[in-house]
Image (cartoon, rainbow, N blue to C red; front, side, top):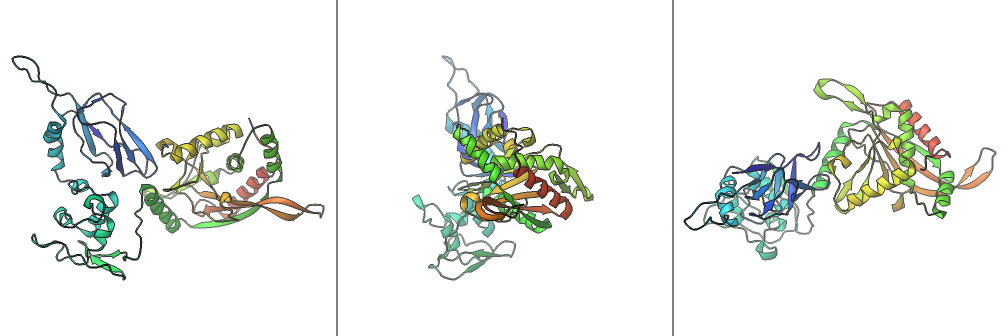
Length: 426
């Protein structure tokens, strides 16, 4: 059979992934550590590397399939060579490999592959499972997509099913489009909401699904309180202009990353997290200071992490931030680059947002929300009025880990660092 290749767990929260692309065909030679396939996880697109060398004997999943962690995706081994009177036979062809290996495994009870005979998108597969549709029932549906593929709209038009099964000789009943909402009974006797024909359905990808679940849990389970503070960016603006004149470009995010890391050094409890595992309530302090920066992508929100940010100069932070953002935009972040964060910064100043509050990125205990820089009249210490660049920063804190005084001290220290000249540039 050869060596079984399984889908590895590429992150702490990863439970499954979508197979995006196979890089090898059945019968091709594969070298150890060579890329076999690409999968989309809840964080980004990852490459799956071969753990041994040999011939790709089979493919147990199709592109677009949802694969659970630790599931066997293929086998790598050697092809048997049979002796004849004249010469050795050539390796078996691709169809023989699939017939001998793949079909046997696909015939097993595998809930993830029960629709493999049909080319269905992950969203359609998920909806079909929710509705309790069988493979035979799906075969009776005439798809309205390209090459008669079944799309979500086709499933939404199914309005009647008896005993969760259909007579063998009776096609699925398709009603004319309705403009009201429809509810269907499922196998678990639950009502499933199906959008009307007047609405567009947007299936959630892996990143959006994970974000939805995680932030819902954070908003529901974490008692969060807010502290707001205005800071004067006059000194940062002057320094940025000076550096820009000599060809050095440093973004506002880079200053906030370094200032936040310094403030966390003085306020270790903000860099900690609350734990209620094993029925024991406790607070665990992180030894490292790892700053996550929220990055908005077309397919969702991702938070790459700058590790040991308190040990980096502004120049090093710039280099690391640009590298992580570029990887995020091309879905090439590694699991290590999106895990291990101890504090998150979210900046929406580029969208001309004056101020906003953010939901804590659990298990962290705090998140900092940064708005736009706005010129405002300020009364100075000598009672003079000056126009200065001001910014409102709002932080959300986990009240299980922090009290108001702890959080207020952190914000005070952060503000002092932001308004100072004390920057580690190189």
